Amino acid sequence: MNLSILARCGLFRGIETAELSPLLRRLHACTREFDKFQPIYRVGDTAHALCILLSGGVNIERCDAWGHKMLLDHITPGSVFAETYACVPGTPMMVSAVADEPSEVLFLPSEMLLSSAAQDSAHSVLLRNLLDVTAQKNLLLTRKIFHTSPKSMRGKLLSYLSAQAVQHGSDTFDIPFDRQQLADYLGVDRSALSAELSRMQRDGLISYKKSHFVLNHSQSDE
Image 1 (tube, rainbow, N blue to C red):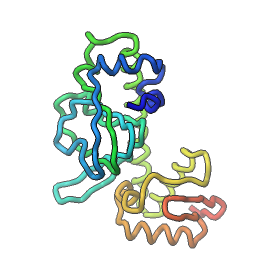
Image 2 (image 1 turned 120 degrees about the horizontal axis):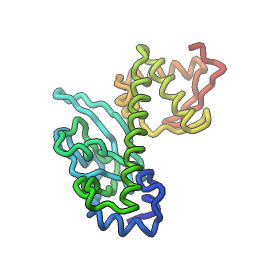
Image 3 (image 1 turned 90 degrees about the horizontal axis):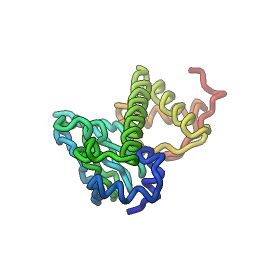
């Protein structure tokens, strides 16, 4: 297991690297590999463990009864997912977690993670960090609401791309989505999204190639 990934994970902030292996053993942590498109959790599953992505990529998706899919989040190595459901045992999941590429996932069983009898200093730090991670996820959800609230396609794209620029600290950046994933994330049609991106580039608002974007603020009249 690559402990350097875990050392950079917010869930283990403040825990010495030497403490990680003993802590993971006490928590009965285990790893599993997944192929591309293989589900880690499906809608309706109950999550018995919190997950940390060690390598690869995972998409958090929602699919309705008619097969319409919406991309809610993209998980990168070192990130935590399924933590909310893991902390409320028995609650059916309303989303699916699907490998976007060959991936390795670390599972921390809820029973051990939330057990007061198993707590020590490192475990207490981990639980405090879990609260922080959960709060950060709530902020991400709020951000998604901001991006999907504008009525126009251009408004949605400007909101999302502006947030990406802030996140990267630059008007030049790469987004983590391809066109279909971005369309799913914003809840729009892919063809309509691609057409609007072309119009925005023609209008001088942005420049882009695939997932690489440059914002031209001086041209914006929004």
